[in-house]
Length: 211
Ligand code: GRF
Image 1 (tube, rainbow, N blue to C red):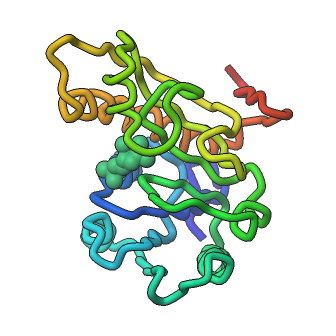
Image 2: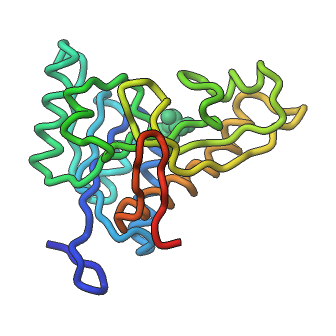
């Protein structure tokens, strides 16, 4: 069992992805730099060709694939993911660009232990293409949010947020790129808070202890 510098067991992190995995990469890099006192125990993808799987393999992290094809029934899909997370002894789960709605079969066994990163200042612009939604709405400030995952999509208790300005010249992609940089920062910060067991959740309010 890996321990940190004061002999406390390192938290084991499960990361769920669907795509390119830059948020996963931010976690891998932070782990290498010693900025998170946890280890990524497994990366699970619902897409067999997700580039994030390559990133995990290059970092010698175990990978698993659970797809719609292998598990067409939503309940069975989530149950298989839970089985794997338990098999790898995962303490908490990070949705890092996991483009799939999850059910109570995954949420209940990991109550308050699943987090998501979303590219807007929630509760504004939940759901897909939050950056495009922000541009089309005409907001001058947007950002990103980490939150606890509940059954309601993008609506769980907020952990950290960071703002990002919107410029007149922005396209969806330039805005997404600027938000992404901040996503990587707050995701790493949030994961470290989880590793240190410093997030308390009461109703929909989170508090960070030891500040
Ligand atoms: C990020 O913008 C994240 O907020 C959203 O999906 C995107 C995933 O990007 N949920 P990546 O796969 O981590 O590069």
